[in-house]
Image (tube, rainbow, N blue to C red; front, side, top):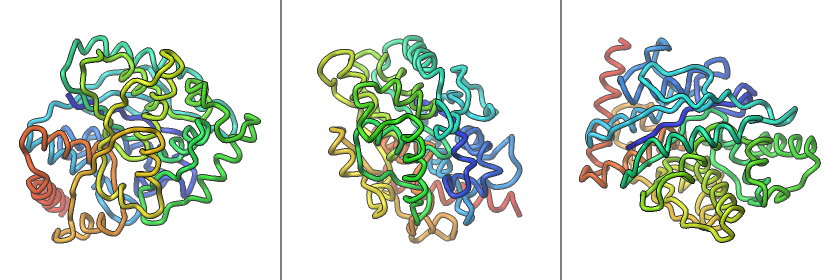
Amino acid sequence: MFYLFIGSTELSKVPGVSAAGANPEVTPYTAPVDADMIRFGRSRIFKGLPVDPHGHPTPAIITRAAVLEAGIPVTAVQAGSWMAPSPPYIETGASPAGDPRFGPAVPDAAGIMESGAELARNAGKPLFVMAAESVPGGTTTALLVLRALGYREMVSSAGPENPVNLKESVWAEAARRLGIRAGALADDPLRAITELGDPMQAAVAGFVEALPPETEVVLAGGTQMLAVAALLRALFQRRNGTPKKLPLVATTNYVRRDRNADFSALALNIGVETWSAPLDFSRSPHPGLAGYEDGYVKEGAGAGGAVYYAERLGVQAGRVIERTNALYSEMMNEKA
């Protein structure tokens, strides 16, 4: 089963923080639109094509291509999105994260983790589970949590120019509010989410921690899911004394080769294995998709993980690439 956890944060409305949407005014639509795109191939709550500020389409189109080619079952989980998606979904009761510069970001992190755990308990004893995310502004909340846990590597971004200085300034302001330095919350992952994170992190962490030990789990995403892996490591250590085996993190090759981030070094430091989807849109007839090769978008809505899932089911990445181009052609024709 492929679970898409959708959430958001007030930080996504800060100009320059998020490229997940044409402008900060539409970022509240981003996560539910991704769920719509994966299920229906179009948005039912937002008119027009879901694109970034430079016209590149949401990576949810790649996820949909993999889902269609491989017959992957998908469930949307409302984990703090500004609005609900159109497809049937599971509700966690979470609200969007607040701005951690001015107060706790996720005051009910413990309750959201319990909602995630309840979802896991209701899932029975699945052999394989993939947890994906769509959270505008989520690389910034990932950075804040990672810094609090003691990791100094840089997270990725949805554009070719990573707003590193802006992200670091948010960390500095939030740390000043709390009176902490990097690594101060290494032994208190719940407080790290509560003060600095986002509700997706809480929901996924609670979900994964409560799954049966025999269930194979994959986290679908880039540095946002590495932050979740770091939280899980801290939770395992705090509750069990020794870390359990962490889930694989499946992302795209665009995140892995991002020169403005430290994906591989961060994964090594956390102690998590990774896999990257061999995507290549350099020959795409669509400039919007070809722009992925120039560092735009990179990942989101579980795109890399969906390719991993498809390959497990015998569908090679080349077929997903072809289907993605075909889907985008259909979208452009409908727009015209």
